[in-house]
Length: 335
Image (cartoon, rainbow, N blue to C red; front, side, top):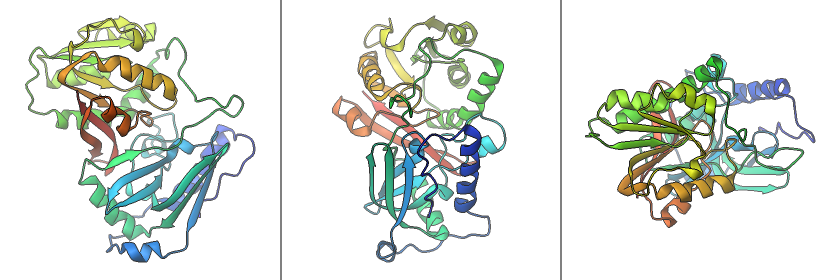
């Protein structure tokens, strides 16, 4: 049982990382474990286990996977390999592995400030079998039901109003944290004719993502905007067109974009309300039959149902990384 978060006030980062290390040791699946046959009825007969958290701890680490034999699988992120290797400065990244699965969901709910998840627990061999099934179907939906909220204000965490400042350390962390996503993007769009296509990132950060895309599709035209003047000052050398502006005030004409990458409608970057307002505004920039791709370092705040209700057809839901045997949110929509 992972009932490790019962603090009435926030932990320091140092205290939290020690707790996360303990959760990692409890959940990580060792190399000598092997997949076993899964009997759903037997699992549903097990005693329920509970994971408790607080809104001001790490509730955004709890995820749900729909689509496994009619059941919802609940999991919880553990200490990321990228963090353990010192490649990012956060405890977690976007990648999900078999070790993070907890069980078949019974219920999960929030009663401020408490988060409670009840589940029928899985054994390690069952986790391996279920994860192998999930990763082979890129239309299994992965989503995050809870957001982090600040202890004092009760509000969602957001990036600075003028965007993130630029420095080489931040650039390195951003690059490492997104490497698996860039690689999956390369595979996903491999072989497509991108001649003169407009590829737009309204929060382009360092421009590394668009620059990598351009290397694989050198006839496309990349446009990068960002709220941070420091980021744009760096990114301008790596995209075809660069501009410092708020995404919601994008000057691009409606119906002008072939592919739009949205990497900022995420937890701890914008609040949920702003994410939806930006998405609704930016959809219009994309041509009919154009595509919108949503992902990020942290959970995407826009739910699949909202996108479909706004005229977007979902083509893909998750990405897969061979190197870490991991999945992550990677929504592709057609307008």
